[in-house]
Every structure is written in structure tokens, then in C-alpha cells.
Image (tube, rainbow, N blue to C red; front, side):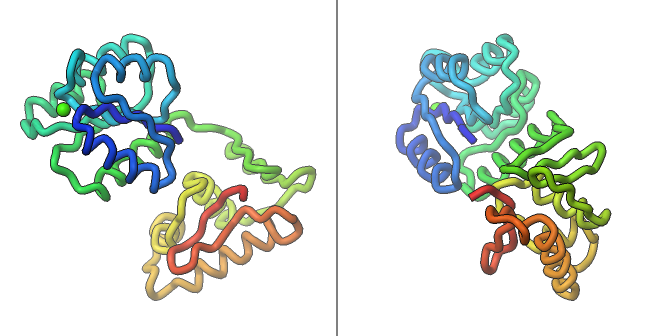
Length: 224
Ligand code: CA
């Protein structure tokens, strides 16, 4: 996932780049509106984090330029202007979310992830391929290579859920509340048992494992 940060405060720009890189993103930083415009229009990004007060072209103007070019990349506005009017203007102009400075990095990261998820849901793929695993979400057909894999309804939902977070850690409590609507503390065995069953079907007979345990956190589905 590649992000563009347009921020003229060098220190803040570097801080964001560092934090986002540690979170696994590839990050370009532009330090003024003109450079931001150039990068936004010539490179392909999954998300743009945009300051409002910028030299040459301000953030609100830049949103209009980007949207005029039919670039639908999600935009998270970043600004010291914590006034309702500016938020409204920013969102009306085509930004997707807004966070006021000073902000907590964890909150910024949560918003970034949320926007990226929303974006991937908008596209609504009907088929997902990861390694030799292919999942037809409409027909509910799962294959690894040539081998068809039969899943129960719950197993399929679990796989679909893990795929929607592909490459990100999914906690047991997130699985519990989304797939089973149960209290994680009292029913954690349910999750582990179901993961085990899914693994037996998806991974056991294959060299390349796709479902990995992240100790103390949960599970991650990815090709390693
Ligand atoms: Ca600024």
C-alpha cells in the first residue's frame, strides 16, 4: 500500500513517514502543494494524507484538482484549523475524512486503515486470488490450485473475513464480534477451533501456508 503525505512542516512530515513505514506502508512525502499536485497526478496512491495550509497550492485547492482529474484516491485531511467550517469545506470539496492537529498517531493510523478498508469494499471484488488460493465470493467456490475445497458456511465467512483484512493482523475478538457475535472471553475456544478447521482444509495439504498465527494477537492471512 502506497501513501502520499503532503505536509510542509518537515518534522511532522518525517514523523508521519516514519510511523506509517513502521506500520508497513510505502510513503512519499511532498512538502508543498505544487510538489503534492505533481505526485498525486503522476503516481498511483492508495491514500493521500493532505495538510490544508500549504505553500503554492493549499490542501482544499489540491483536492479539487485531484478530483477534477477523476482520481478517486481516498483523502484524509490534516489541519490545525479545528473549525467546523473548515471540516465541512474539506469534506464538501471531496476529502473523505478529517483529523485535526495535534492528533494522536494511533488515531491517524486507525483512520487510514478504515479509509483503505472502505475503499477496498467499494470496489467489491467478486474473486480473490492469493497465491494459488482462489475464492469466488459470489459462487462461494474455493480452490487451491486445481483442488476444490469444501467449506461450511461459517468456515467460508471466516475465510472471507480474513481475506478482507489480507496482510493485516485480525484479532480473535474482532473475529468473535464479526463472525459469531459472541463474547470473546468466554468463547475463545470457538475461534481457535474454527481457525484450526479452516487451516486443515486450506493449508494442511499445501507447502505454502496462508493462515499464520501472530502470537498474543490473532491471525493473519498472507502469502509469505
Ligand atoms: Ca501546513
